[in-house]
Amino acid sequence: MKAAGEEQLEQYLKENFEWFHRHPELSYEEWGTTAKIRTLLTEAGIEILPCPLDTGLVAVVHGSKGIQSGREGTIALRCDIDALPVVEETALPYRSETVGKMHACGHDFHIMAGIGAAVLLGKRRGMFAGTVKFIFQPGEEESHGALKILETDVMDDVGQIWGFHADPTNEVGVVGIREGYVAAAVDRFVIRVRGVGCHGAHPDDGVDPILVSAAVIQALQSIVSRNVNAFHPALVSVTRLQAGTTWNVIPPEAEMEGTVRTMNREDRVLFERRIREIAERTAAAYGAEAETVWTPGPPAVYNDGRMAGLCGEVAEECGMITVPEESSLGGDDFSYYEDRDTVGRELPGCYVKIGVGVGKQIHHPAFCVEESAILPAAQYLAALLERALL
Image 1 (cartoon, helix red, strand yellow):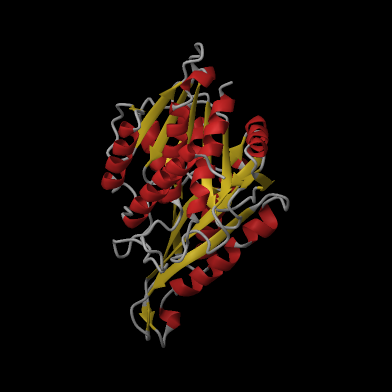
Image 2 (spheres, rainbow, N blue to C red; image 1 turned 90 degrees about the horizontal axis):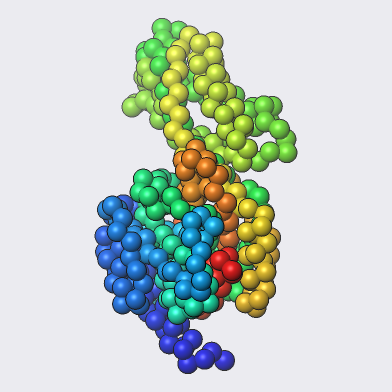
């Protein structure tokens, strides 16, 4: 049975979770979301740091048990806040009030679990030394929102970064934890093929960019099967191909777009080089030209072994069940906080999955978080952050 204080906190978390679910906002448009987070934290007596952010904010809780400063005494928790351009298909009484926008990735859950953890830590300041920064980050779904935070000085004194995500593959009370790589580097490519347009009945008068594109698409798959170590997770997917405007004309150009997912840093470099080589040389073999535009996204997410071990210990103390976190070729810009190329140093990080009830997968229009998951998630995160500073 929950204590009276727990029941009151749970009701508070659920009511505000429902507000965020009803009012989803897309990446970099989270003005109402930010204002609501600011109000809730201010009312709870949580300090808001003055950061030059258009959306999103950073709050801080200082422990009062002794003095612990610098990177050894400052840690951070990332909570992403943006929604998706998805038409909601749940029957929830608090479903989205904005057609075409939905919290289909659980970021409303992330917000309230983070706020709940901040409130709990605020009441336990005398139990730990050091500082916890709560980063309510915009733009995760656009894959670069973390860079908005890193443009400020918020992370300069942080020695550890923690992250979490709603997990619809596990029941409430289950935490997925794994040491090592848990999410992939995410890169995007566009290949433009230039041939020679002609009548569909006379292909010998031109150079067919559609035929060239088909050859390129097939050849790209050889990178995984023939160039990458068989024990390294990796994939390349062409997700868009556009060419032509009518049925009897061979067009002069075609364009394809896709994504590359890798865990290994060297494989990431290899893919960019091989995609350019395959596109250019295959096109040349058919008498065409190809240009590749490579857009790097977040690097791979790597869980520090010591931090992952602490996650398991605290989960057990909180009465939660731990399971191996599934490695995924999905990505998360949480990795930017850990990456030496973006923060100038390798920052230890750990990213766990918290069960929200088994149901539809994230980004599905019927994705749903069981509200009973919010309080235990907040309690777990608060306990984890407190232990990390002891």
